[in-house]
Length: 479
Image 1 (cartoon, helix red, strand yellow):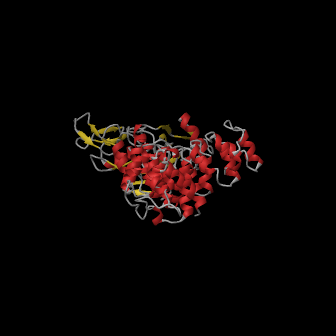
Image 2 (cartoon, helix red, strand yellow; image 1 turned 135 degrees about the horizontal axis):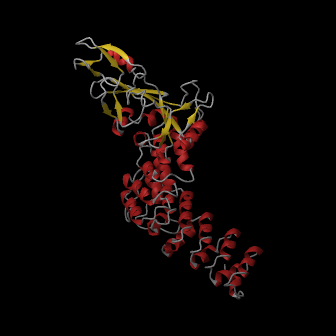
Image 3 (cartoon, one colour; image 1 turned 180 degrees about the vertical axis):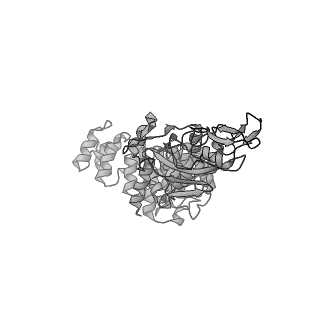
């Protein structure tokens, strides 16, 4: 099965309006150990043999079914699953008269009306709203369909329409037996006569187990719990769906953060709507895992203490050498989070240039001397609103050693200082000079000299600046 069909199947499962589960089985009588057909989901089951009740509450049904409706029916792992004396399978109700399957539309209408008729033969199917037992066993249960009548299951004895003639075992007198009692007293000798099994079963036919249906409308979280333990071919589809869904159900990010699938944890760590407490849990769980790095770089995580704790766990505190497995890509991810303290990037962006020695403790260049990687990182740092808080010597190094991307990041950042803009003016890039001419922090000297540029767009933009003044004699000789 292709990944596309797996995604379509998972989408259909999560958006399916109703689920129908058929259950057939027997309940063991707690008094005489006989098999009672489980044709109803009630709190007690009446034994037709001994006449006593056996409790069948939520705990009983949960132990008997063991959640198989979720793990084996809804996920498609098995069409039919047998456990001890129970058979569970998926499918919409079947009419007992014509054996035709009731369509989903009719079942949906029955949820509101609690009445269900076969669209083919018109026969009424037994139907009632789900009780507390059904809701406790199957989350989201709304309807019970196809249950046997009370008399058929033996919950209420069925009396014979015509009395049966039976002789007293002591005096031989004729007894009138209607099936209401198994111990019949003789009105002549007052002896009690116990009706034999053959006669009692003739008056009370043994019920036969048949399917009854639980119709459920699970919540979004209940569907996702099933989907997470569902088919193996859904593994990649689950990750893509979590990453692309506009909104996740409440509680799902916390569940996925604790799930064993690293792909789902990584997808949650990258979502912008993931709650900060979930991102914090991902960082604390394993700071060296990929999802921890993604969580720290997520702008939704605004807890500086968690970010500093991550740096400490990665041995990146000030004055230490960078671990060999900590790539520049990680620094770029961290720089994208405004909550990451800007001073942590001082040693990273201070890449040596030909006429400048590296500061003590600098190690990034020794690890990854690829200048384009450093430029990409500097561009991310330069675009941060708090980049101006870096020391001026660090900003000068970023300008001198950086490429066009770094220069444009500074020029389009509204917090860039006039000193940095003055340095950027020296680079002969029309796009860069045009951005500087429109920057509100550019000083008067920079604007005057930009107004003398040959490119008419740069000159005109500089003349429109609020700090523009007529160039002096010395401006004609300045760079």
